[in-house]
Length: 129
Image (cartoon, rainbow, N blue to C red; front, top):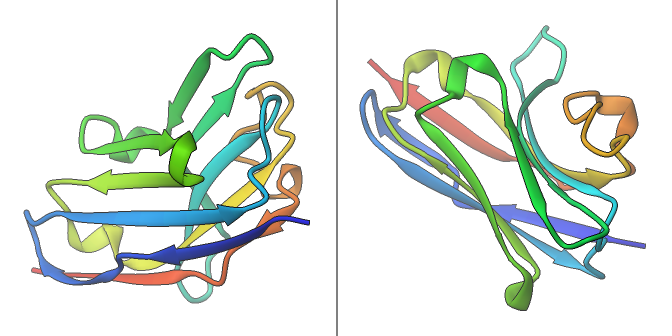
C-alpha cells in the first residue's frame, strides 16, 4: 500500500511559478512511474509529467506537449518525494493536480490513468491572467 500526499498548490498570476510536492509512504521503487495528472471540471484527467525508474536505476522523464520547457519533474529518493516545478504558468494550467504511482509499462503508458494504482487527494492550482 502506497499513500501519496500532495502539497504546494495555490493561486498565482500568469507567468508565475509553483512547485508541487508529493510525499509517498512506501516508495514504489523501480519499475514504476511517479506521475502528475491534472483535471478540470467536465474534462478527463490528463497526464502532465512522469518519471520512470528503470530496474537499472536510470530515470526517464515524460511531459505532455503543452508543458514542455515550462515544467520539470524530479524526485528525491531520500525524502520519498517527487516534485513538479511549474514555471511560466498560464491560465490554461489551472486545474486540480494529482500525484500517482503505478506500473506504467516501462514508461510507454506514462500518461494513462488506468496504468496507475495509487493516487493522492489532489492540490488545486489556479492561474489568473
